[in-house]
Length: 167
Image (cartoon, rainbow, N blue to C red; front, side, top):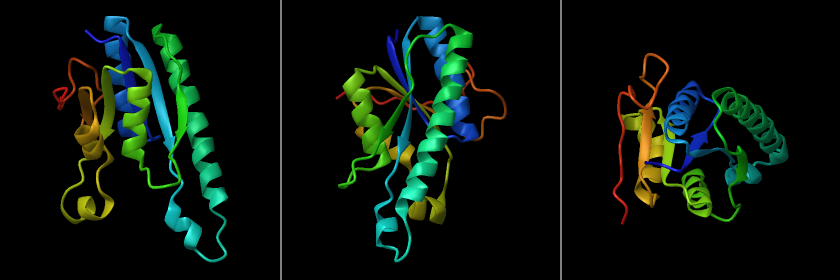
């Protein structure tokens, strides 16, 4: 079924449920799992007078270490192989969604698993949707785990999944 799964992590409860679903799939299929935390450089922060953006970037990196270490422990506990990664957005015009798709392509992922917060209306217009952009750009299927999942998500019981047909 799947042999190489990427799961996108951001430290949220939703991404933790996405990791649970990815762990279930990897354990069932014997797939290699690559949890990825993306550090965004937030270019607008560089334009703020008197603000040192490295403080925020360092905080993101620390969170990334915490999140990927947790993923590694959970993988070991489930007997799932793979290596968590922290990946940096390129400072010149790349966004988180593009970085996730690039890493998926680089590792030859045949499935991307990620959480989606389900923003609607004005919040979605202002904040955008990383999940939607990944879905549009991905060259492999994408499994979305919604924030509204009431309990621990699994591959069998995820409330919603969206799959993109390969081009």
